[in-house]
Length: 401
Image (tube, rainbow, N blue to C red):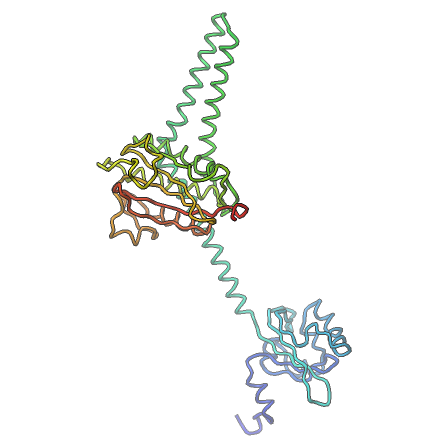
């Protein structure tokens, strides 16, 4: 740089060196000084802007209001934008707009009134924020798809038991319908007998409908929707569905709801929470195949004496109890082969599995679902040689004291 080309004053040197745009205007909003960074931001040459009203660098409606803001400030001292930094939009020479952060200050100590605006381009920052938001959206969608696939996979594994569960009421319906037909053909029709048969057909049809409804609900694809649900209903529905698989494998599920009131509510996503519990129950069933010699649930064990009448090495206990005023704990207690201590640290990691044909996503997805609802999932060895997997569910806000 030659001597003639060098800035004449420290102020000019400061303007030239600043990475942010700087514009100085008078009390009429007319541009008096603009630095190189501002020229580059707005794609103007210095001579094109000097003497122009600064509103030419603003899109509507800011361009229409700017002069009134100045007049109001000068007459009353009321600030609309003077002395206040804010995120706004600038307009370039080609009329394209860009996001910017604008700070406007009143310059004191000079013979005339001036204002200085300092401008920072936010384009890169907003692009990064948008990229992050898009990535988060894509991750959320992928998680929802993966969760849905896991539900479908679980239903597939239970297909034989589900088919058996549906076939039973259908067989009963056919039997009652044939009996009714025979009564009608015999001519010795007793209306009470027919009504009884029709009632039984209705009951069996509703039984089949409930199974199909549960399957349809679990098969639906949806995002996380947390609402208040009766804990008793939520867990009972899961157990009713899981029992088809348990019976097929020669196991029994013992449900203990004695420690919570019948009207106890939890705030969860119904379908995804049921998916987690169904996954844990199925894992418990599979951990007990083939059968191992295990101590039975009984009165002297610390699980619950409620299982006394169902004591069996084929039992899986589901125990629900309050942890505190904010959380309930649902535990699935099995008498299986337990968790190898060498695997305990990795159990909830994605793609880790101890099953020969497993994908290693079940418990990882369960962990994500429960965490997204504000709960936790964990396991411990139990005295029966098996494992106890527990999840915590948030109690509905209205029921928290």
